[in-house]
Length: 347
Ligand SMILES: [Zn+2]
Ligand SMILES: [Zn+2]
Image (cartoon, rainbow, N blue to C red; front, top):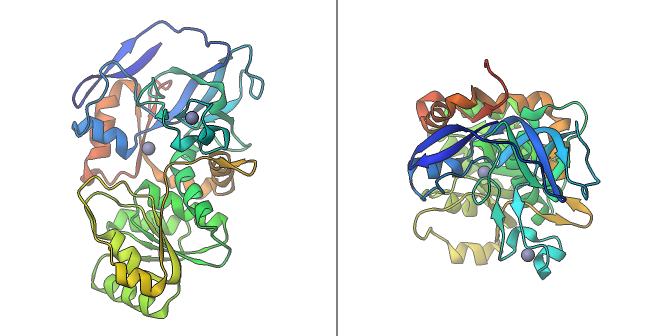
């Protein structure tokens, strides 16, 4: 079987390796679609060293091709998505469902082989059966979507609340669906025209740009005190966390989903205190009260399957993996989510 693997900084190669059967607690999956994430691009750019020889990919869906003897919840032939979190399974955090903050946690595709391959093998407990009516490409979108499902769960988002989403990359855009699934009203701040178009396709109630009109509208929203929850999805080195603090209403909540790679960012302590605004960090997804964020994300994708399809803007075969990464990196490509189809010869 063929897989992509890191061969150097910013370089992937396709190799042909033997397919090994799963261990007793593992599942082998024939990959239908695997997405490229911003974190994969960090490795591609060389911001962090990639593990040479490792197959990337933590957003994927596919068909179960073999199961270990102890795996009972899914069977061969099932379409599954993978919640790509590895964990110790024994610490208090793991036992209580907060396995995303396990001290030994890691991500499939970063510390063990991921989904950019014809087949991959994962721990059985990370494989979730997909709901009816969606395919592997849509299943692969559940991973980024699960991040905002988790964030909204942390702030107990209610129906008819207004959510202001800062940023319209794949986290910001999938957050529209998670907010809609909660019955919330959504306003999205999107920089690029193709992102604004996607936000509208996904059913955002209002989309504003970063132009003069957008700035004026944000000030209007701030004064009107109507934003219950502001979601920061940009990260990096921007001032979006400050914008989120300013726009949210008194006693409102700011959810931090973006990954801040730069130095410190600005906090406005007096403004936060005077308005009793809470800033809440949110990392990946987890489980609580008999639910997992990942399963909810799969269900949300099923509910909004038609809208969600617009997120996948480019698809490539496995042999084109370097082109696929370059496309995801190239702003001019206007890509939102670039997917690999490892088992398609012609795309
Ligand atoms: Zn990711
Ligand atoms: Zn643990």
